[in-house]
Length: 79
Image: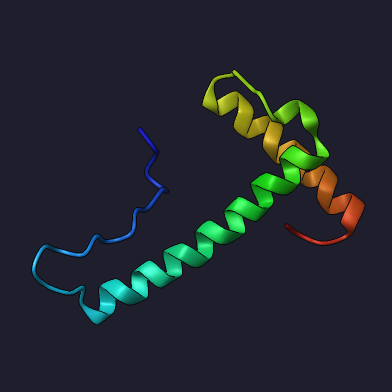
């Protein structure tokens, strides 16, 4: 289960095209995905202990949130 907040892009139907609304939605999802990938990379590069985590999802979420706060304090900006 990926959670309620996770969204997937629309797939192109066989034999037709995506609507303009679906294309726009996919573009937004790609943008969000890029930001999330960058943040994940920054966290794992800075905090090497996060590279191989085998905790339950709620616990790793708490740890990642704490790491994010530390990065914000260090760089004086949000990631």
